[in-house]
Image (tube, rainbow, N blue to C red):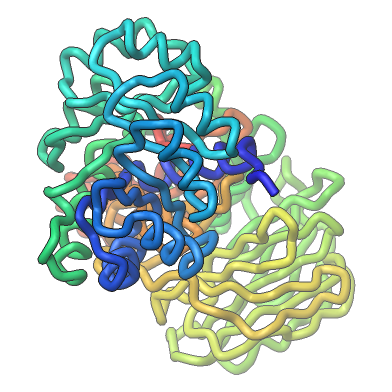
Amino acid sequence: MKPDLAAFTAEFDQRLRRSPIIAILRGISTQESIAVATALLEAGVTLAEVPLNSPDPFTTIRVLREHFGDRMAIGAGTVLTVADVEQLVASGCQFCVAPNTDADVIRASLAHGMLPLPGFATASEAFAAIAAGARHLKAFPANAATLAAIKAVMPADVQLIAVGGVTPEAVPSLIVAGAAAFGTGSDLYKPGRSADAVGARAREWVEAVVQAAMPSAELVCNPQATVGEGPVRLGERIVWVDPVGRRLLACAPANSEWSQASMPEPVWSLGVLPDGSLVGNGEDAFLRIDASTGAVLSRGPVIDTGAGCRLNDLVVDSRGGLWGSSMHRGVLAGRGGVFHAASPDAPVRKVAEGLGVGNGMALSADERTLFVIDTLARTLLAYPADVVAGVLGEPVIVGDFLGLPGKPDGMAITPDGSFWVAMWGAGEVVRIAPNGACVQRVRMPAPHVGSVCIGADGALYVTTARARLSDDALAAAPDSGGLFRVYGSRKQ
């Protein structure tokens, strides 16, 4: 059966947005291919091509496809003829990369359900490739000035991939010129280089791309929150809490006007029910909250969170069920858990335990997985979830935040299934791909970043804190405690 090219094209574009690097494994042998590709995957690279002038390329492609399945996309490089394309069908090849523009090769690739990536050096070649049906073009060899000129006249849906002598040092200028992704060969892999060395260089590539594509943050308003937590989108507004100051905060990003309301008790996080009303985590109960006055309209049953513990983060499912995490006030390991109630007023059950600090929470689009950050363990966990029955299965670790500064705190999930995570103490928010790799980092003008949410405009909104900052630290970061908007982040 011919592959679903439309579905793969969408998947390919998602991979480019998450980690825009195509590893060119020229000269790789079948025997070493799995170890090398595993090192690439662990570094966050999920696209690789095996050029046809490598030893036994058709077997290598087949072996890689069978071994990695959906975890990596595997293509062929140096595809020069229609006969090459036809021979690739049996290998499971997913995309065909060429150094040149050949309309027959492009059409053959499309006909067999493989994505074509033809090479071009001139505008005429680029438009010939587009006319033949290609929408991903390989600028070969890559040159920032030429790329910028061609990008200016390209259709908006065409993506340019810079290939040919590209190094991490060239990434910033090529991104500015319009490159959507990068193909790298001998700088990353060459025969004789160990899988460990390939993995180390791949991590340098990923870091270079992350830094070059780093978006910017701007202050929306600054209510000087002692601790800014639990932001949610409520209509056109962003609403969040300052539990230490017992304040409900709200801001309309369109005009930066903000308001505050006193709350009768600390509320540590917020959620929005399907009817648009506001709920929150008190110390030991789920609360209905008046979004205008901050008043507690009703309290759910008292939750036995355990001695010395309190509720912390919160997420609401599409049925109106509440899922709240907990933590020990003294940050003792193993004392946190997850609690569920079918509504704010319904009985509450403990559905998970053994967490250090149960923090950022998010449900997958199909609501079959509940993601929870354990700040103390520095892990992002995925629990199989049944929102109808209100139960969780045993979790698996998605990521561990190794090598990242700060402590993982609040979290938001994006439409493509990746995660924005606030890193308390690091002055950053980071984007974590579904495979656990960090694919983007954003510097914030405040060291303590509490949580994040996605607004009505699709932008990322970030809450920050002034707590535990010295006078010198506040002087260096005077916008601490404010609400920030992140511009230019990839694939919101």
